[in-house]
Length: 128
Image (cartoon, rainbow, N blue to C red):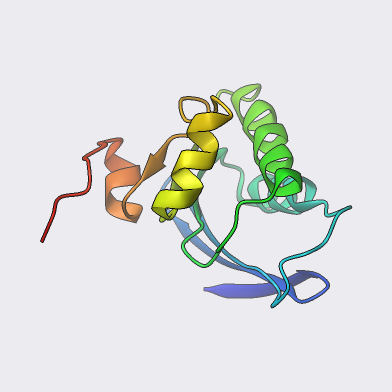
């Protein structure tokens, strides 16, 4: 695993697997950065890996802000234009609702964990 500083306290952890790249986003304490080029930074990682299949782990993101959603949509379009796949995992229930309200839940599919994202299996959260 490689950790990279990307902007104002934001970091990403990058792991490479067969045919996939796994990135966990670590937002800064205030999560506020308006002109953040997340999509460009992640795209660079994908190009270096020679694969366009990404699982983006967002379990550390408390609030899915509009600028971050815009970056995810931009990244998704770019990945799909190269016949790749973007799958999110670990979104909180609140953040899932945000994507649903924006009608982006199909464009940005969310899975409970990395394993489910790899398999492409969406299973509703089960009560414990």
